[in-house]
Image 1 (cartoon, rainbow, N blue to C red):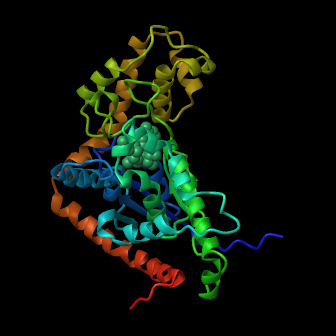
Image 2 (image 1 turned 120 degrees about the horizontal axis):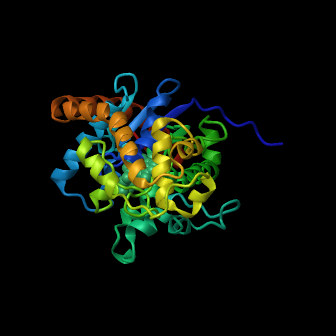
Length: 359
Ligand code: ATP
Ligand code: MG
């Protein structure tokens, strides 16, 4: 019989990189769910600036993006008083725990068949971002998932709302938690933490649209770091910019189908219909009931109007907050202090479990 699983208090953690401003994919894949979870859970939302520098960031741009992503969080409805909003580099424990995860590799029974470099080698984000030039990618880009595991586990968080692209990293976080619990099992038990020190964090891939694709290429996901601004709808875009981007969005010459099945072979059409459905809170089949048989020239303006209607309140609030750097910085300072108090407790225990001598 399996030993009973230790109960961990439910806690939500997630992060967004300040590699640019938030776009529609971040919003529909992650932020909408972040906001909803505040009603039921203690939530920690982090602007993950240490992750951002795994690829080069101009210092002034990075500072600006950290503040903009924070403003976007608040404008979308995240409450930094009730919950915690902060930037990762202000809590050194993230990097400290990541180093431990970089190292944990006890050879022995259960896991000796799995080489740790082997785990990281399989990560598709690294393959995509490093591109053909893998030898010149930063060590940080390769080790990114270990830092992500540390972000979550330093709070012993149990639930992680993310878009579909982060599923593989979340699975790795679960493996890392389990490996730590196994490798240090005796030490964990000896210090009174029961059978497991870290929970197995659960991915919540439940936004209204979990994988929004680029407007220029239906095979690529919408990304902050895509060099083409035409590939994404930013939360800061004004109505004219939105209308232009949707008008220029790649499509095919066929009219929209009546049947959802027919979207499978038409990624660009599928993406636009999916965006409409997610924003309107209806199914793709319902969108096709309304627009099936019609041309994109009729559908695209309706989609632009819906985007403007849904995003403009957020955009207006972001504009208002963005220039108030004193307020944004005070939110981050307050959130960092509260996050650090929690993270420091975990690190103390981790140091004892690992066998470090501490004050
Ligand atoms: P970058 O290109 O720098 O990696 P990004 O656009 O991928 O930026 P992240 O900060 O890496 O954004 O991700 C923040 C959150 O948004 C994550 O939960 C991620 O899964 C989600 N997300 C990112 N892109 C999309 C997308 N196109 N559709 C749905 N969710 C997404
Ligand atoms: Mg990303």
